[in-house]
Length: 79
Image (cartoon, rainbow, N blue to C red):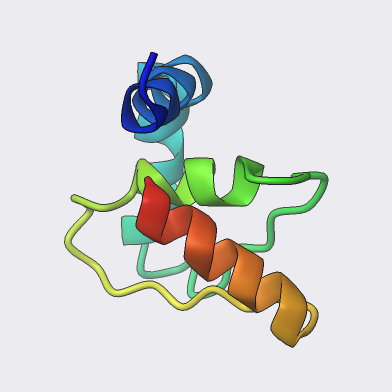
């Protein structure tokens, strides 16, 4: 399995339709300007936010430090 195929496979497993739908509801809710997710490890953050690429809103992701931001950026660009 090629790398891009394995990333898509993992994304499909992680981003179920129910999870995508509920997260998109939060993102488009004008009464919810900030969403704080915790307990995500490794590439899970990138996988979660990859499901929001078609939500029609601009998103800002804040990492704990420059290294974490770099890893997050790399993961998102790979997905």
